[in-house]
Amino acid sequence: MIRCKLWPLAFCLSIGLISCPAVQGEPTNAKEAAAKKAEEDQKLEQQYQTLIKMLSPAEQAWERTLQENLGNFYLPIHKRQKVAGQSNAWDFVEDDPQLPRVLLIGDSVSRGYTQSVRKHLAGKANVHRAPANCGPTSLGLRKIDVWLGDGNWDVIHFNFGIHDRNTPIVEYRQRLEQLVERMQQTGAKLVWASTTPIPDDAAKKQASESIVQRNKAAAEIMAKHDVATDDLFFVVTPHLDKMQNPDDVHFNATGYDFLGQNVADAIAKALK
Image (cartoon, rainbow, N blue to C red; front, side, top):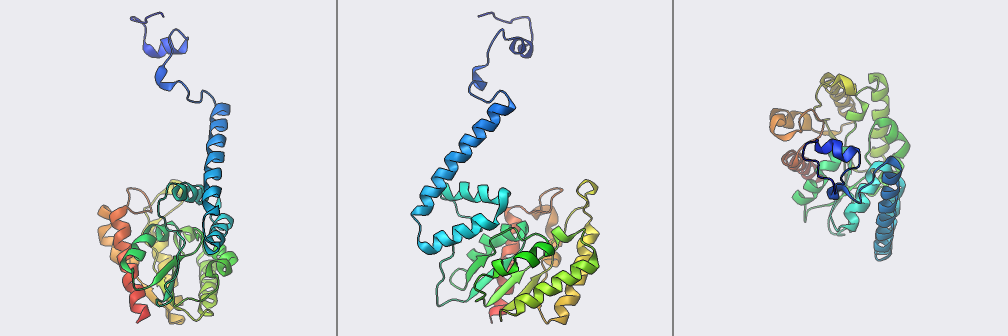
C-alpha cells in the first residue's frame, strides 16, 4: 500500500491510493443508500407485522387505525418504537372500566405531553389520544369522526393553533366552532388548551403574534359555548427559556412534563 506521508489524507482517498476501513460497507451513492434504506424498512415491517400477530384483537384493531392515520412521518417512528418495546403517545390503552375515559386531541406538542398526562392521571383516568398528529382545523373537520372513535368520552381535551398560524382568522373561527359543536355532540366535557407560544421565524412563515391572535379568537368561541380553558400559553410563557427548545415550537422533557401536569390538573378539575 502506498503511504501518503506528504499528501493530504482527503486527496489520497479521492484518487484511490488508500481506502478508509471506517467507511467500508457504507453506501457510496444515492442508489446504494436508497437500497439500504429499503432493506432496513423491509426488515422493520417484517418485525412489526410479526409483533402485531401476537397482540389481542383490540390491540390489532388499534394498530390498523394507526396505520391508516399516522402518515408517512409518524408511522415509521411508531413502528420502530413498537418493535424496540418502547412506550409512546400512541400506545394502546386498555380501559379500566371503573375509571373515566379521556381523549387528547392536538398536534405534536400535545403528543409530547401525552405520556406525562398519563403518568399524572394514573389510577384516576384512562387517557387516550387521537390516532394522528391532529394538525390544523381543516384536517380536524375531515378526521374528527375517526378521532372520536366510539365517542364514549367523559372529557375531551383539545387544541388547534400552531398549524393554523397562517389560516385566516375568519376561517379559523368557523372551523374551530364547527369542531367544538361536533365534540359537544358526544356529551363529553370539553377542555380547550390555549396554543403554546412559537418563536418568530420568517423562513418558516411563523410569527409569535399569530398565536396570540388565534388564542384570542378561540377564547371567544369557548366562552360562547361554555367550554373550559386550560391556559397553557399563560402558564408556560414565563418558563420558555428553560422549557422550550431553542428556535422551535416544541419543548424539552422538562417542558413536556410541566405541560402534562397542567393538562392533568385541568382534566381532573373537569372530571369533578
